[in-house]
Length: 142
Image (tube, rainbow, N blue to C red; front, side, top):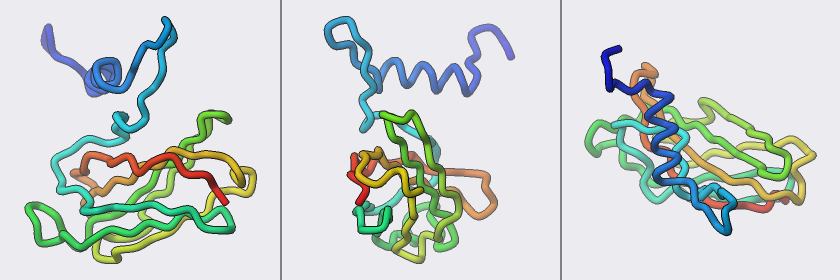
């Protein structure tokens, strides 16, 4: 790597420092809706929504945009959940395809009553490209 070139790790760290970190009263805080779990050129979700349901379930819905740009009906849906209190991530890979328009994940029982930050992302079937990961909000797990 030549002088001045940045690795993917350095680019990610730079993005986080520039966009997803806020200092309040000299204390750094993450700005969760600015965090990107993935960044890429693949067309992202259209109107993605996450909703908690009883039984530690999170339901997801989105609209079909598989004919837009480089999107495909076979693009793979993935979910990342993070609980700040525990410092835990739960990662769910290949839970649906873009064409399914809905999916759900079941979090482990110890998440009941806790808040989790939720992101979704798509990658193509060949796992060669992905989309920017939209932040779907902070949900209280039921």
